[in-house]
Image 1: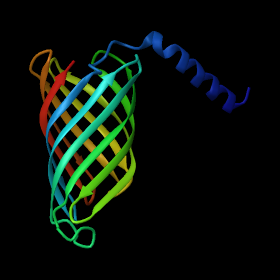
Image 2: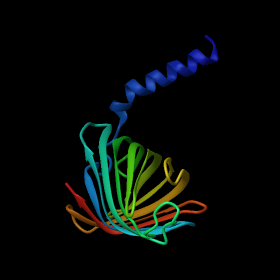
Image 3: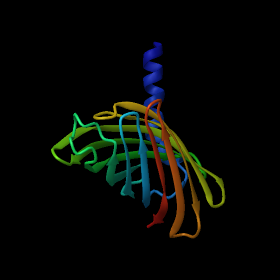
Length: 194
């Protein structure tokens, strides 16, 4: 048996036996609601964000998000007003796997549509592709770490670090930052568990 067949056999066995060994894991249905700040070389925006994850299957969740942003110092060659409004909508799937009650790995495959509305309208369509881990470091404190690539208007890779303090079984406080060489995202808000 050659090496390729052995690797393929191990991968197939891992896929079919994974459900038997998966742990209960972290909450897969929640919504983050709060303030977003984007800072880039060419322009910035502040906005209100809703980003929800719906655990519909044991290993796959649906994810959808919307940000309403107000830009500042927007390039006048793209919009003469200098401050168009932003509608940023994304949706897709989040496959995930729980290794234990404290550790969950995930991947995001999302469609992303950004629309700038000012003196003229501009739409940017692309994708958001991410992978990361969620780790419960204390009974009520979760740490998230991952990487993300965005196509369309930003077209950049990001390192993502975040955390959530769970106040009770319905409510938490969530913060997150995404850092790239020229672009930074910041989020602070509430996490609603359902």
